[in-house]
Length: 361
Image 1 (cartoon, one colour):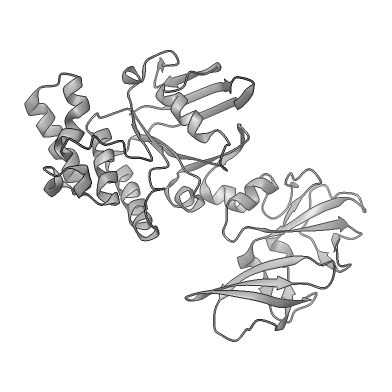
Image 2 (cartoon, rainbow, N blue to C red):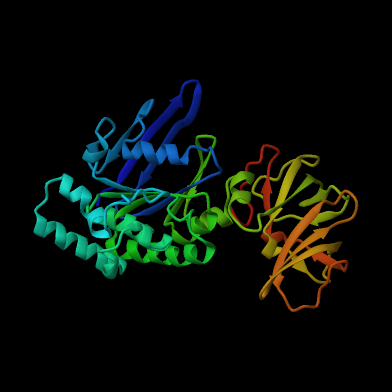
């Protein structure tokens, strides 16, 4: 195992700059997940660590070695691709052993390493099959096994679960977490799926347009986002954002003209300052209370014991999403009192940056 350090990474394809001065440190044994929208540069960054893309600028260190100019085979990494990249004409055993044979490892040692990885992944009974005879989840395990046998210093995963159906993705997330606990290998994992990021990561790295927006634990990013982009990227349903204007005495006026109380701020903005008020759907309160605002239920998504309600306010008041336990008492078309608890609000300035000094900062 080894730590990974990316220092000022830049990558351009012609005139298009994909990575813009990206610096990341991944600790020895850490499971770090890179997330971001399509085209943000996350796969390019991973491929640069693997040596499959040459950086335009910056350095990459694995442990105490500068690997920036080394070939992929000399970097001490193993990469698992979205497509699995298995050889269709080879058996599972032969696929897993392929890299070791190229490295001219002793046959007995190859057999020992393949059997060890197969046992870890519970695929011992698949070793004589070819990829065409395997399910998607089994193929993914074989691809992971091929990486394990190399005993790399760094695991690199490029959206490894994106080709699986929903139920299998859940099970494979559990297996990835268990595998990391077993092996403890430093891991850099790319996904566009925030659920994978939130459930697997020790730390999440949020990318947008080739730049890092925020790095932190899943809880830190969820509860203390540095800007509106991170706030809305993580969380499903995404955070509600309401435009507002600071008034006197620690309050803000929403677009519909109603005032709401704000959490204390270390340096309150001047009255008349435009801000955005954010609140997670699970923090929106339904029920009569001081300061509650009337909203009409437009649509209800019922998901077993949970209900996601899409609410419409008075003209100019915008829409809200609320998530709560579903007891069947609320119906589309009902008008309900909606509260925005001040201690659950996130506040952002006109540029979308989090205001410091709130409950969450």
